[in-house]
Length: 439
Image 1 (spheres, rainbow, N blue to C red):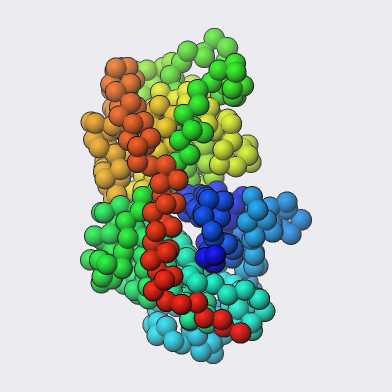
Image 2 (cartoon, rainbow, N blue to C red):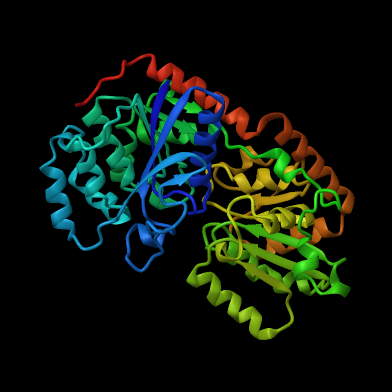
């Protein structure tokens, strides 16, 4: 049996691509292969909670606190009260941290991102955990849990791996001090060849130590049309007025911030309505203050049909309303610069929906422009509006893009395929270094 420790920043019911990636890998590998995977994580539910007590956290009373789909979850509270000086002092007195030889600037910048979980480090350093592992796999650069993973690797003398989801189009990800963290891992997983090239260029990590494994989708879940037999939810019947159910529908699903392109879409809406009024815009995902402020401006005008759903309105990754929205949308739109891959594009294609993404970062490797989707300039709301109108007025083109994307997903981008590649990589790594009991 292979025993793996996963260390994400957060875990379900927290919702983002990084968390879902670990969740699906753990579920598939433990159910189909001979793996025992434990999840060590924080008690944060949103990004704000990673560094601030004003964010949302999960409590021990929650049904998902200790177990999710038969996976053991070890959640540790984030310490918000310790000063940065106290945090630095604690780590500098930890011999396993000192073995990493990280610079002072690297540590301070990583601490500011959170989540700071000294209890988790002590849990292993004081030998309170009875189990030993063969590999530690962590995710989400540039958060502090990456350094915790490296410390645990030193404590147990086992390999460490990171899937950084490297959003290299965002300048803050190219900080030299933070990049130092990625150099310390034994292996990295990149979602695309583009990401791998950037990682090699900016970190100096050898190509042989970076494996390209894409993201996936549960194809059969999304490729399940609404019929009386399946009894799936009809999104339009729930949210559209009866006489407007034949109106077009544009969907965004993701974190509602500038980086994901959500605010750019809001700015494009008035331009679309000048030429095409029979349309709804749907936004699904965690809100931000900036998005809510921009949305309130449009709502005051009372002439745009905008439906805004948050995780509080939904039930997990496979929420029936969300799936129905993907299936009934005429266009899926996520013009983001902060995606290492973009799972939502795969969900749209699996649902038979054409996509629009931003011509930046790794997205051009995922979406083939004018073949299975359209690429627009990031944060160019005028071009976004133009391409929405172009697709709305070309039903045959929408159908063609959706078909091409669907075929690509069906043949290549299923989670089972991703799990198989991950399994092969794990096997290669754990057979190179024998397990060492740290007690």
